[in-house]
Image (cartoon, rainbow, N blue to C red; front, side, top):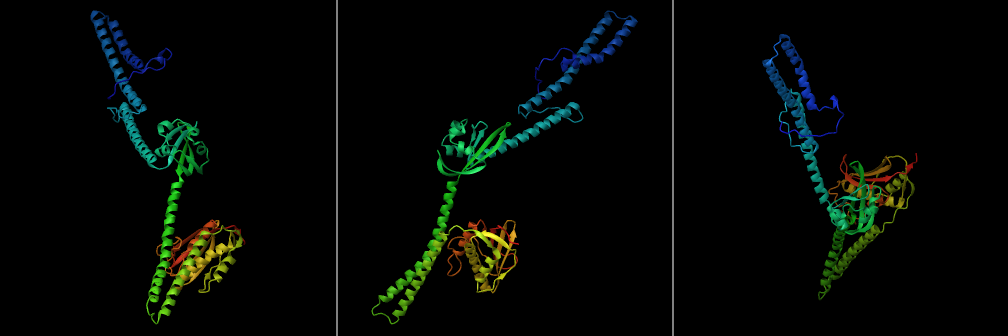
Length: 458
């Protein structure tokens, strides 16, 4: 063993044999084991009458040897137990570096030491993992741009990360131990679950997502408060939306203004010639006609933009779905649209808006199928609490779907880029979803519209 025995003092026990220390019991046991042999020796000496000076000296030497052997036995029994006590004390105090030196199998004390050494190594490995995980968690908490606060059951702050310091505009040393009311977090700490707050903090104002979680530490209830700044994310999304809109608007305006400018210059150069050429009249008319056409296209573009921006909220009413779909299909005259039979349903929608969305989707499907001499099919079914409407075409399918729902983006000559976006706004305004994807069973595209179902008509 490689540890010195500690001296321990416990509570005083009642007097008697049961209160005797383990060391004394071992020593007493050694004397008890030797007692029968000494009794026999004394009896023999007494019977032979040989007890004299020499016998007395022999007895004293024997008693001395027995005492030494008993003390040695006591030491050999007690010392390993003290060493084990040292090892266990080190484990209790969190010191996992001590090891017993006589750990070996097929030995009672050796196996105990071996198990204690194994336990010490296991605890050391586990503590190392916990420390590494805690260090990683601490770095993550310190690096994320989300304010994190931990409060105990009395509402006093126990933990704050750098983002929380910036939100409160104070250092952790001055914030820890203060109540939520003193820190201005009392309203956020008493929310249930999560809530969006619009308020100001010393470190900023705007819209915040506040969430509260409960946990226990040391058997006592604690609260974790997480506050996320929504304003920055919303501003970034708004900026990106404006960038996309300006890019598309600029593209469309340039498409109209460039030919207008070119034709105006051409007509101006023709009229500036003296004398006028013989075909100046036809050239001027052609140029003015092109200018008028592009001006009309630009006007239609602005009308489409205005209609997209002024889409009113849906006026819901109970509508039978099959007749609504039949009206949409009957409006398409360029191609016979196949209509699959589906369940009779009643939906709570604005029929005018939903019809407009489906007309736009059906128009796109027909225009994609006509050049390929393909067909268009409309089907519907119920999936849980939603109705799923599918418009399948046999066109070339989708290339890139990144810009499908970008306003005014179009790949069709003369297209406005309004139809899909308007259909998406209508469907989402009804709490539904619009998706476009390539067909898996054949070439072409499928438009998927999902809307809430109010009930079945039988």
